[in-house]
Length: 314
Length: 314
Image (cartoon, rainbow over all chains, first blue to last red):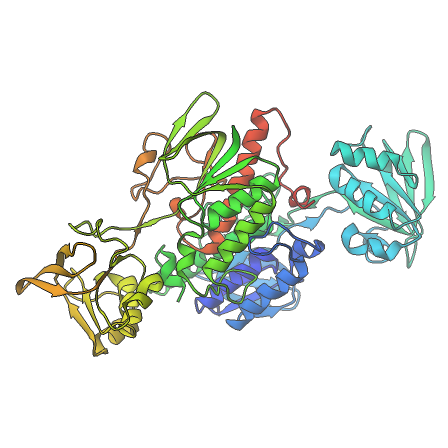
């Protein structure tokens, strides 16, 4: 029986684990990967204390901090949580774990295009991260499917590396920052397709092309890569009935990172917090960690931490 | 007319200034000092990203980050804010400044002992910070006046430096962590006075002693220093009528760091946030900065930032 299980290994989850383990709680982190969305960013300039740090280095540093206090990590995707009498059972495909409290901090997931061929070709030409994967498409032909600044950003990044970039959008005009739109329209190897829907991603072992319908009708376009830039969603369907979610599927929390269910806390991008930022996720992770600590201490009949930071800095 | 004035230069205020200046807002920081309570701590081990960092180094780093984006600093203590029609006037003893939005982040202040002689002798033997000032009392006689772990901490720090330490407490028994109480009781050069009240601090240009009443009656004790360890208070009397405060005088904020008055935001230890921690203050400062940015953008009829972090990382 763990004192706390943290679900997720981004800034919020790692900081929560640092705080709970440092307070002496037995802490298990269950996560698919370490770093969350921050690892997509090679240079973060707005995390206080670092003029610039890569998301990957940040994540590795915080993980080490948490491990120094004996936080345990397992690389498993959680797919269920069952509320028992005074404790919880957290379930993954690989096992079940009991704990007194839970901190949900698994962030957001890129939104799927949801067409045939997509799932089969992920990592075989289908990517959700231009920053990560653009270098793999040097001199090749790629399509960016998406809307707004993320799609424009991906296009501008890829047009400097790929031979040709198709920017495919459902809308009747590009949307986003004016300077980005201007740049996308003026680059020679970028072709913008408006009012266009991608119906299928083609290819068996690698992406070979896409099938697109636009005003002119149906056509196939040969590409080696498809970058899906449709924003992010909170994958929280499996939490319905356990904790309250808002209309976007985000977990509703109060100022102390408490969810609607006692003993379950949430922090970072998976919550309904308005702004998604590294330092905000870290701050929320610390709050969730201390709130979980107080919850467990009270259940055990022991004193909770006082609000004054001094008691925690020993 | 500044877009935003940040009141306070601790972790919350510095991070708020980093965020507002990085978003291109004209930003003025008005503060008595840089670093806030964090500078009392030589080694912070629970700020994500640093295995250990001193509070002073942290503060200097964040100040430099904010200055790179042209945040302006003035070392003035704010004593009034007047709400005008669509803007605010922020007042110090040295001047008045106009701004569209305000971020209150001036933390907490040590609680006074509130006896004759105290105000006159601050910095002349009266101290509110054992970590800062203990080294000045090598081989001297000092009194620690206070309760709980802060008083015990100060006593244990001073007994290794000073010749003699009086620990003076109003209670009938020591209160705090058992190991700290045990150590205080067993150290030879520590004398504990219980049920004891300090009535006056004696001395003209330097502390010479204290006048104390306890069960045995009134007495004067010769000391060279008095360390007041009575916890911290939010000095917010001057904000009454402007923003809502809780029973402890803390500024009430919602999850987006909004106060009860539009255009005024608050972050860090001065708020009613339950836990006071460096990374929590920094996270709240970032939220307050982005909330102030959106407020000012809307007033100017310009687009606010979306919640997705990607738009902010350019």
